Length: 239
Image 1 (spheres, helix red, strand yellow):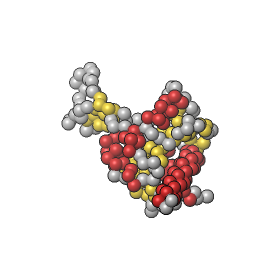
Image 2 (cartoon, one colour; image 1 turned 45 degrees about the vertical axis):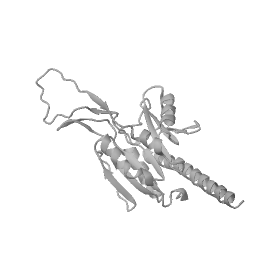
Image 3 (cartoon, one colour; image 1 turned 90 degrees about the horizontal axis):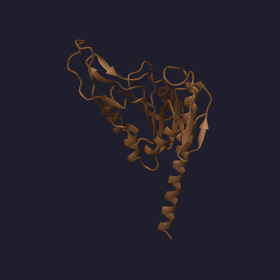
Image 4 (cartoon, helix red, strand yellow; image 1 turned 180 degrees about the vertical axis):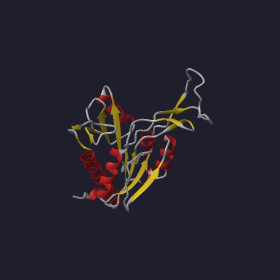
């Protein structure tokens, strides 16, 4: 059943990993496959939303008339791509596993194994979701992900507040058959009021439906608030 909250809405989704080059043949990355982000994008398209999918390098594919696909490699490229569309987006779902750091210098030629060891100095990447949280409009919805290995709930709530999310999805590396590489996932959803809903292990398509459903509720609430504010402004003009 289609959710009218998504009709003609523009939703920005980030997915997959980023790759930070060390030299022409090596890079630093993570195990993200993009399956969760692509499943969310697919569910949004089924709900008749217009989706802008900014994807790191993945093996999965997605095609749809209402899909605008943007392929990127590095965290900087992902940020710049999102900058083009965040302002017009009604909601942003930051699913991508973005590298926190990148090599300070990229070797022009392949690094040879002449020395028994070498050191890579790392520079912090821009925190994409945090930057957009600073400029988010009141009628925009921002959804984040937290993949944690310890103190999971505390870290997730910290990100929820710091990055001005309306909702954050917590994954734990301690859950079997969840997170990177699996076709299933187990999540907990925290809202801005710190309420929490814990979901059982499910196929990622079903997990995506849960996340999109909750995002739709937030969008509908924002739309209602906007109408109420416009009504109050109109009434005050004619009092």
